[in-house]
Length: 165
Image (cartoon, rainbow, N blue to C red; front, side):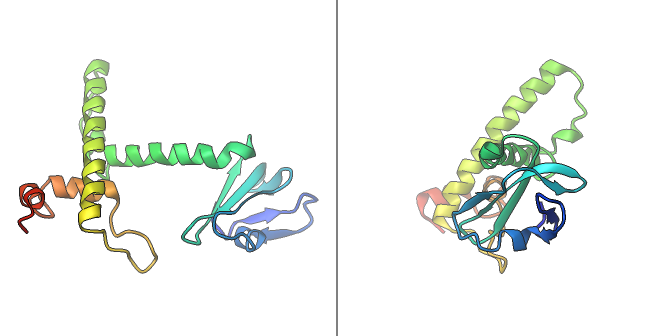
């Protein structure tokens, strides 16, 4: 949810923005609001956590609020993979493959490429940390950093490995 989205009280009589409801959360703390709340025109459970960098993460779910954050973590990893497979990396949608066996093999190869790029990005980040922008996030994802590096956009792998800069 956006921090500005309104959450109604259980009684439905008052409403506050998410950032006001969870203003007291400290880094690392999590809170599940009791019972369902009226958000976006439906009854949902609302869960929030304050991340280590101070950012507030608010989730709305129609079931299992106790596992919502863990479920979201898993989903975020999948979203990152899909983003890399599509427009942020490999442009999978440009292939227009229709044959299931060919598409399956391509996805397997791209998954290997994704892992290679992520590991390369992590390694390169350890050697040359990614710049942190004013909003506190990295200028590039580890995937993009590794992918650019492998494509030769940010130096030559052989010179990095041998220590010749």
